[in-house]
Length: 115
Image (cartoon, rainbow, N blue to C red):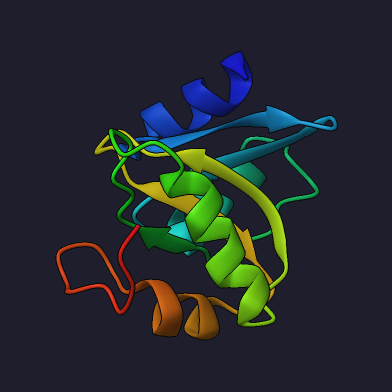
């Protein structure tokens, strides 16, 4: 983590959310290709840029996350991981970003469902 933060920080790239699980780091950045280049330039070999869905979640509504997950399952979207960004959005690692946005909406846009 320290080496990742140092490499990205030196390149002027902020991490907007993320973490590490199963020995793999996942970080949300504004420009994935630029971040990947900065990491590779600093000796990181296995760097992958993966599109994610960033969506609103009414975290104060009990059951909102469960309803969101049910909506994804009902739409046939497979969730591989999730975390929050620094603006309290859910960041979803899914197999189909477009399908996730179709059923959940994008931040600041009306959602096609109520959580």
